[in-house]
Length: 579
Image (cartoon, rainbow, N blue to C red; front, side, top):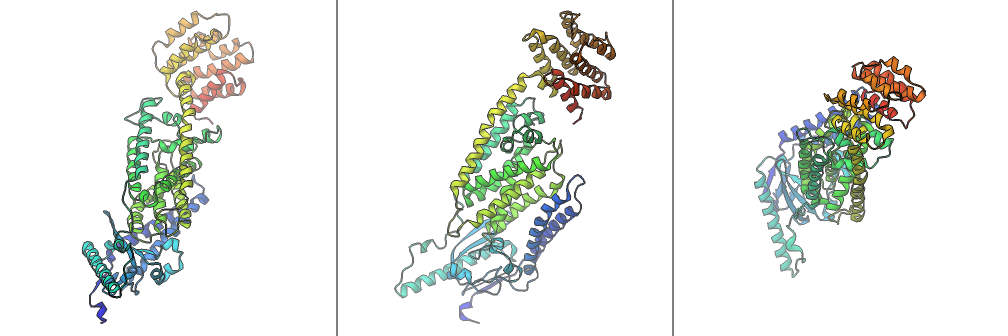
């Protein structure tokens, strides 16, 4: 035995843990492939395979990379006086002098030593098997490697202490040698054993964003158009205050909803889960890449999630939530981990991110329905955006920089996103105020008491149209089960000229005329379109929805678009589910 290796320790791989990880990855790969061959009937199979192919390839490669470790007969880690043999580079001894700095990162599920190596020494490390054929951005840099202590057999603290002791001895021996030959150590030599990963400070942006999300949710409850149910805003409130809705975005040009929806949440549990996930993501990732790019990745992923939600989900889906941005952060963590090969990114963050990311993505093909709370389509859009942006970021991240380049561009994008969202408060406020004051909007929102009150106020504003507002007030009262509906209608009828239109409509609702008799009293095409609409309301109040629908369809095709009856027919057909 070489005298330099008199002190030598070997640690075998923990095959049980490696096998468990391998089986989990294989199961995920099989599940993704199964989804490709069995997509939901309402989804385009081509869209499914667009996501299945890269997902299955990614997890399949991870499984193949684990196989050599799983079946290897060589020790997972060897440490001796001469140097260290790393798990990912078996058969190669790395001198202690090649280690410029190191750090240890511990979490509940991972315990890792991170080594920053001298560039010249790093180039001597040779990969084997599949890893040698993959690009460095995928398998990680040779200049930053890691030792996953929990994947080795032995006590993690004891292994780490031995590592520090051997490295310190080697460092001290080198220092003494340099003193003997009359050389001095570099000024920063005393810092050689400092941790390479700067995890100090606080994730300020994460805390600010958490405060904003909570404040916005409080605003949803305070300014909602309907009382919240058990602390949960109604769908109508979410729509008016800025949730995504395909028709509003595509047909009405309300694209600003793509920027406001990520700040909103559909319930207290929805908010709580997203806040916890954001706190986990920001706890280390923000400090790793800096708040500028952390914010940019979040906002870009949130935008990607909003677009995917609108594109993939059913047209009647109202989308809200920061999930797209948060899932994008975890996808970015996994993408960025390949820069560091192992350690806090490759192990701690990669495993932690996968635990949240995978459940958020696997059911994405089912997307979200009208009453569901989980928007898997938005999750997948956010994940794709986050992973793509992080991969692009890595390509322009110099090895010598602690944080990525182009921080000013990242700040500009985040500022633009926030400015658009803030500016959207103007149309949101106007829409909310209009709806609060518009009895017709309240009527079709199911807020019949407010609608009846609003129609009563409108009767005093324009006397010529007062009879029509009296009729709408009656319909709102009937829908709201107001026992005074008939009495109020009789009072309104007594104030209306019986020889003019629309007095016959009063007679219809008071039971003095039948629908056919009302049509006979209509003198021209405009009155006939109105009579058709109110006949539809009469049938609807009587419970005959089929007859009512026919009358509303006829009124929609015959009434001028400026008439209340045209808007009424359109609204009733929408309520009946007729496109």
